[in-house]
Length: 161
Image 1 (cartoon, one colour):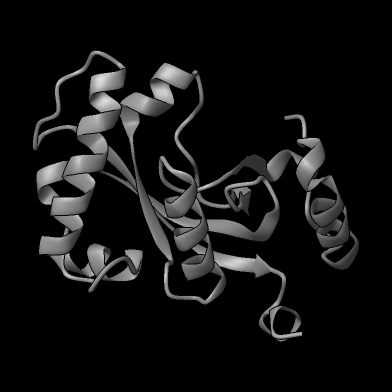
Image 2: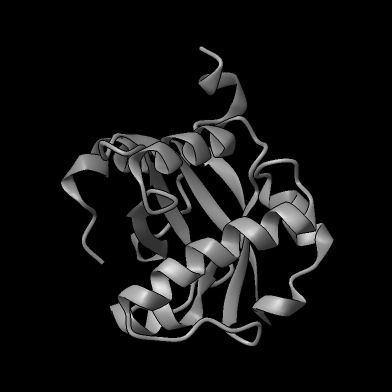
């Protein structure tokens, strides 16, 4: 996988600190959501430790020709301008139909009030936009990759500086 130029500095700094990481664990550099405001808001929730999970449509991974994230993958989270914010490590991925996402998962995703009702309303709207763009039809059975992660860089003491 090619490390995008906008995140190479952070990635190299991380590799210099954590000696046992193989570059092959790099999954992607990305921002959350589908708008600049969403990317900035959700990125800051990750940095603050509030957002520790995300859900992506399995169909979107297929359409992009990318594998679903796996435990141990490392990704660089960026803001809306492509500035790297942090590096996350995937700790768990479960493939779950939209309609079976749990309140526990909604809570650790850390958005809005953390409730399952909020999660379903906001994510249904998001996935409907995504489905419309890819000529698919949203349904409660749509498969999601429910990914949990932890921030591995910068370390909490570094992000406060």
